[in-house]
Every structure is written in structure tokens, then in C-alpha cells.
Length: 133
Image (tube, rainbow, N blue to C red; front, side):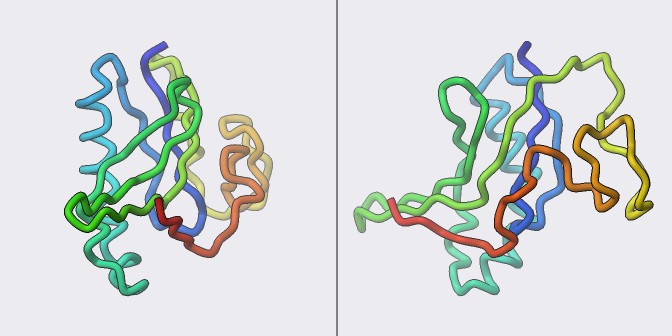
């Protein structure tokens, strides 16, 4: 499959997105265009607004991803906003239930705990972290 649902860690205010990865370069651009407007306020709050000039990167298996910021001239970089990728059938309905805090089990969202915390990010910290590279 070349279509993936991307869910970001709870510490980062980025809604999930479903992206066609048949062209990985375009897919990474699509994820960045979707996420950066959501990341800018959080990065500014953290005192690192320059990190918004970043790109999305996944592992070779396309199971996890993150944003990376590089300062080539300064020899510095950072990784932030971890994400989990799950292959999906593009013809299937969006797996995220539309209700916001219904407290009920939702068959459309595996791992739904009534607060719309899907399996992808259960147990992830709700505190943003930036790792230097």
C-alpha cells in the first residue's frame, strides 16, 4: 500500500492526515504543508520559531516519522514532533470517529478510549521534546 494515515504525538497540536506515498517527495511536502501551520505556535512558545523551516522524514519501512530542522552552516539540527504511520486502504472511510469526547467505544477508531486517543499515540508523552542531532 502506498497510502498512510499519519498520527502525531499528543504533545504536538497537529491533526492526523492521510497521504498517498506513491511519490515520497510529494508526500513529505504534503505532510509539511499540513503540519507546519499547527507547529509554528508551539515552536514559538518553546522559543524555537526557526524550527518551522523543517521537513518531514520517515524511516525506510514507513512506520514512524518526525520533523527535522537542519542548520547546515552551523552544523546543528533537531528532530521533533514524532509521528506514527499506518498503511490504509484509500477506498475505506476515514478511520477517525467524528465525535469529540463521547466516552463510548468507537468501532471506527481502534484503541479508542473515549478521548480519541488511538493506538498510535497511546503512552506517548504529552510534553513536547526536541532532540538535537
